[in-house]
Image 1 (cartoon, helix red, strand yellow):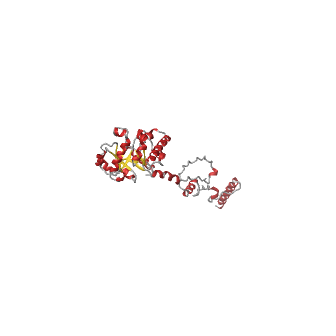
Image 2 (cartoon, rainbow, N blue to C red; image 1 turned 90 degrees about the vertical axis):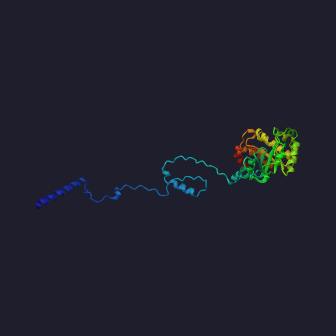
Image 3 (cartoon, rainbow, N blue to C red; image 1 turned 180 degrees about the horizontal axis):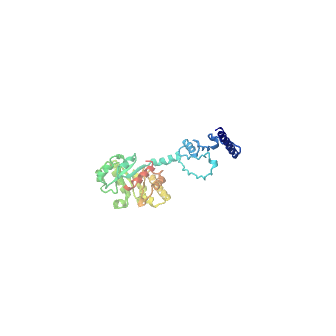
Length: 330
């Protein structure tokens, strides 16, 4: 048994020597755990919380003034990457406070102007009314509608309009509401009698007599032929002169319009320095639609010579008239 054990051990030793020789003289590798540094894959880097352009932009905009465009901040890895072409960000100019105030506030010479118009419903004029404004109804108007429309319009702003003196005193005796003005619409049409058209000066003198005898102010709105031929004679007879000017507005260039209307108003003012002058404008003079900016230019052309603006319009044009009135500061 002993010899057999020695032989077994001797065989094991020989086997060990043969293995060592095969491994270049090194002994068999130990059965210990492999080294972490020899076999572990390096961990991937975790980006820090502050890396990248997004946070930089947020930080930049958090303290920037309202309306500022954030500028891009390069990321820490920008140097090792291919740069992309930048696209310029369009900038929108922000109006200055002065510019906004100039747009929002009409010039004082426009804000002071009185307003005049025919009334179709009472809410709109009632929201505008101030001293010197004139809101009118015609001789054919329905009495019930007049009472409803003028319910909230003060008496001192009301005017009754007529195209003729025939039967005028009887009409004034039965007006549906009290008024402060008599308006005489003197035109070359069938509604004005032939006798009045042939002698407009005598007709206006008679209208003045009727109006003043009743404590009313007289306002006239003659059409173009009467203004051009008789304006200087009519102005001394009236309290308010509203020359119809829609033909000029529709057919003349801005330069011609300004020259014509300024000459007319200067003539009327020289004839009666105390007369109140209204410019007649319309969103559709003689059927030609115009924008409110064109109407405004008409007013601006003579704003230093007039006291008010009479707006001739129809009910479907009410919204445009509201916009125009706003441009006048009302």
